[in-house]
Image (cartoon, rainbow, N blue to C red):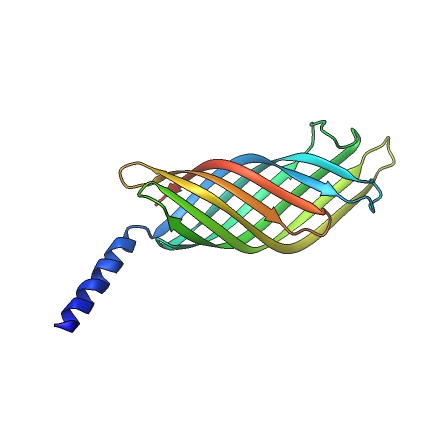
Length: 184
């Protein structure tokens, strides 16, 4: 009798997670902040960067997924608090593990942790004589977000992400993006 109860309990647990697994792809846009400390050739700088991100991954079950993403951000053509002659950009290829908390059938929260390879660039384009800090780098990425699942099989997802990057060039770099995800 105990064998049947264990078998029934295991099959019910696996049946609940079987429909959550599969590949996903998507894209998002957003904004974030980048700051440099006063010990740089550019002085203390803080500015808004605008980001575009493409991502894809595999959801193992209701509670776990792996994801890769390509993120690019820049302040080109924007005049916030950066010097008008100073441009900043950041690009990264990242891989992350996601821990997911299903709050309801259509709403989920998640936390992510991983690493990235990327490039940070801060340059002063004053006249023809510019100086800059262009550096290839790698580091950690961490963040959190939420999914809003749509469709009869939850194949469409609206997604909001917060990500923080540990960079060598910027003292602080974070992004908030919102976008769309398709679940296969």
